Length: 318
Ligand SMILES: Cc1cc2nc3c(=O)[nH]c(=O)nc-3n(C[C@H](O)[C@H](O)[C@H](O)COP(=O)(O)O)c2cc1C
Ligand SMILES: Nc1ncnc2c1ncn2[C@@H]1O[C@H](COP(=O)(O)OP(=O)(O)O)[C@@H](O)[C@H]1O
Image (cartoon, rainbow, N blue to C red; front, top):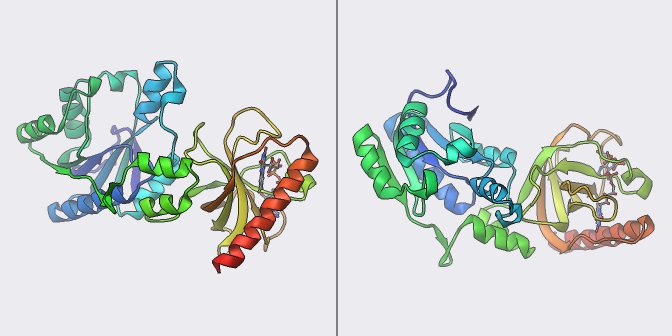
């Protein structure tokens, strides 16, 4: 999959079958839509393309209104979104900066400048609640009319349901907030996971006797949080069982940076071999929320209990 930041690149495809959206989580509804898009692209002999935004438009508006907490929590980082889009067979992704100028664009200007002149769309697929342009003034009917004028086809995809319930990013957020990882996995069509490069932390882990693989979560409000039973992919030939904490580590700092820290129950590599590696951590089961322990001793004892619970969980799972 080719990824472009903006559409002023010589390498951008001269024609495409396009869909537009935030795709937070790339859940089963998104996956059905992407499969349809790939099919349409193949029939037309053009690459499939996803247009997405960073920051999330709702982050942008909430920030601008001075109420950043009003924005929805984030399921996936941009890295994970792009890797899921690639796994779904999308050939080109374009990430546009959602800023003041972009938000002020009239629907007609968005169609002309972005869809037609920028991305050369021949086909545009949208979800049933798609709105676009300043004040969300553009809708499906308008896009359809613009397509007839500019020479691209427009299609709308109805909601995708599982057990009679609409699959949506909000439904995934509700499941993750409740720590219901089985429900989240059912909606996503795979276990919820977070990936990234292992970064250096405070080197406190080795003092506690619990070294951890640290990944940054590049958004201040992850949709999930707490202590989880996990599996780590990408470090070893087989996935490594572990126990992890996702959050801001209230016991040891208050900077609010979100980290996913994983202690592997068995460590098959040299002690420092984890750093710099790109790993994917599957969050399988939630044990409890993050705690503010009164001392490092109490934190260490807490982690030891979590480790024991994770070992028990794996024994019962196998
Ligand atoms: C299983 C597990 C549970 C954890 N639970 C908490 C917690 O409840 N509260 C907290 O502040 N930190 C928690 N942590 C994070 C530790 O504070 C952190 O891993 C430790 O300080 C090491 O930091 P370092 O990687 O920067 O050296 C947990 C870590 C693990 C692996
Ligand atoms: N059981 C283990 N689980 C996770 N990482 C481990 C383990 N044993 C050794 N490591 C290594 O230790 C590093 C983390 O050590 P730590 O003292 O927690 O420092 P940091 O503050 O950088 O996280 C990891 O990046 C990894 O290479």
